[in-house]
Image (cartoon, rainbow, N blue to C red; front, side, top):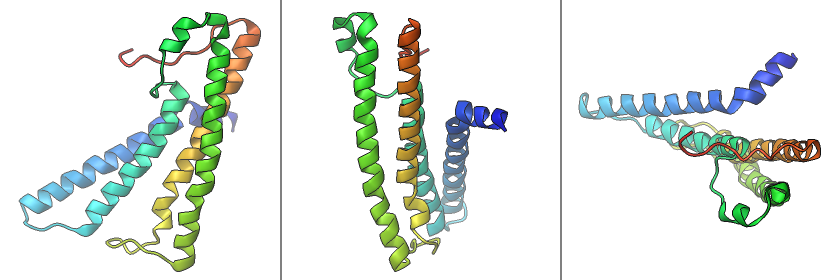
Length: 171
């Protein structure tokens, strides 16, 4: 069981991103062929691609936080001695945690509304909350990854190791 959890922790976002990206590419490819070769298109294809892209975005946000590959202002780190970088990262992580908790709370409201009023999608005719859950899922995953980063940074600081700075854009 531990090996499975470790594999999910290491590669969970990557596999989910691969699934949703493949789904977007496949559905859009099929719809292009249907539209220009068969002169027929469907509303469900556009909906599936759009909602898969939304999942792709929110899971990608979590992956960006995990790898510290999200946009940040690095000039500040040049002004501060390296031994104090941990506190800058901790400050950013705490701010991200606060934002994620607030966003997680407010992203639940449309889901509850959709469930209460049985709001369905136009083409697929399934409950819209199935797709709206991408936002709180993404923020929950981001919150988990930020917590992991904060714990790792504090452990590294205590052990005298440099703080994990993330991957550069072209590494």
